[in-house]
Length: 115
Image 1 (cartoon, rainbow, N blue to C red):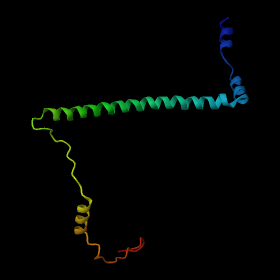
Image 2 (cartoon, helix red, strand yellow):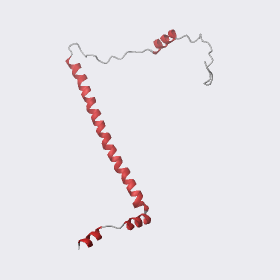
Image 3 (cartoon, rainbow, N blue to C red):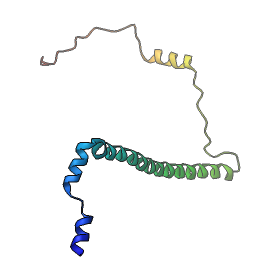
């Protein structure tokens, strides 16, 4: 009796071959699509974990900065002071460093030429 139950529960390999011939979508397409969908959910879960860790680190750094600002007597410690840049002054400084009127032509050697 155990042999009959065991033989009924086993599916012969020929039925899978027949299934693949009758509808190749169920044999090839469905596993591929399910792999893509489940893989995208898995990757999304992993990426969300790394985003959460980065957010916690940023929050801790922000709390440290804010606590240092709050504990100072004379105002903010190492506060962000952007340097004011004037483009005209920067252009004048570059013109003083580089003289574009005095130049000389130099021949660039070919790769197969020796020095």
